[in-house]
Image 1 (cartoon, rainbow, N blue to C red):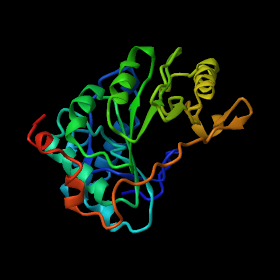
Image 2: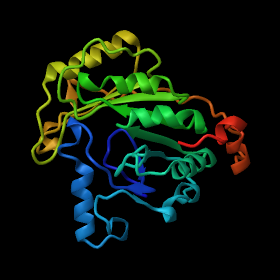
Image 3: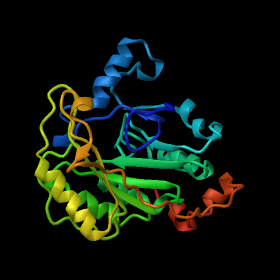
Image 4: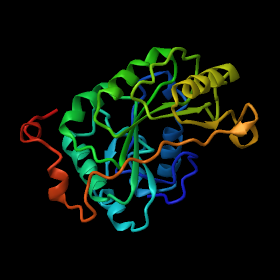
Length: 263
């Protein structure tokens, strides 16, 4: 677990799963793949398989050992709903998030079809924020899938933003993040694309977070949009778990019928 993440909208990262495969236009210059290959070359035991999907049982309980509350990005180096992550392992991750009630967990996926199929079978405590990535208007269907989940906080990450996304249906959406692509081969984000999404958020009353302009040197291009830094985040909902949360309390969020269904 990294306690000081460089990702602007979170504080820490937790990777019980590493590795992924590319499924859409936003994956072309994947930062996680570049990092995983560097870590493999450096001899990191978690990346002995490079960027192949790998489960890390030894990392599952790390958030329970971290006593101070943190905002934690789940699987920054993978996708929680990748087809090669067994549903039973996803359930274990959700159980830990239930039990670690003092943290705020942020999960982000491009596999919204599997998210939607799996969501009725998972507990959804209010400390779990669920998001989907939308790179261009071709992927707004992921927002519709997200909207149908029971997540207390639902958010969209328009990063890397690679085209205009107009007339976004923000009904039921609690947060929007926008960012340009960064690193080698970064594709440019046009200012009007980011401004238009910001204006849609302002009109709908949805908190807006501008992460970066991106480019080969993201520190140089910065985070200022129309003269200001946009750091808006949604208000955290009240917990739906009691302070002395246990495995049993997490399991009460399942219905008897749902626990018998396999994905």
